Length: 236
Image (tube, rainbow, N blue to C red; front, side):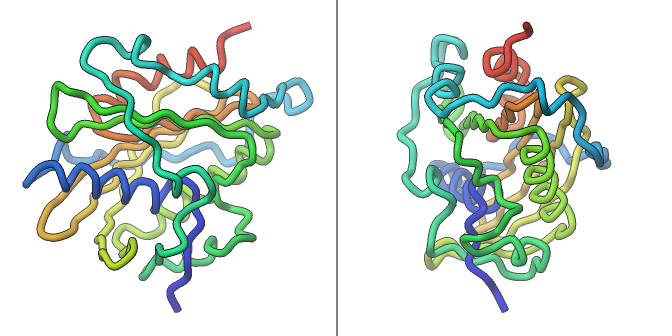
């Protein structure tokens, strides 16, 4: 039976990002074809005892701004449904792994209490968007929670998410992640709704007790992921 999903950023948040892009253009397919998957580390690296957990206020101060991104970027108003653990009217169909993570008590969702988010549009392209999400918790919790979500999405190459009354076909493929930080995950997600297709890249990097997740147009994610990590978790 389909279950309501409260996944904070993956299926619901990416669908909303893709739906927004689809509404701006008749065709929003960008980027190149996904390449073969690279596996994320199975065990967390780093000293959990030495990693300092940051507050939400501290995380907000480490988000990228338009000044960091450069010319052509504008802030995008945040949706309330992306700040508190997902929309109540979102249902996952055809992906048992994600369905099992649904419900308010799902331990696998990226619903870490210490979080901050910023979203941007890029005026150089009609449908280019970028979001940066920061989370902080113990190393063990960040590693396990993030790993479960990315693994669950990777287990279902094709499934459906219904946002409100809008059905969205979702295709997910793991791709090689950047080689920095303590743990890395990356995936390309294709959304199809109303005959329109949108591709969103999502890359997550954990360094110590901070998780950086950058999602959006593939080229923008590639351009800014390292900058987002450097500001969120500066080297000691």
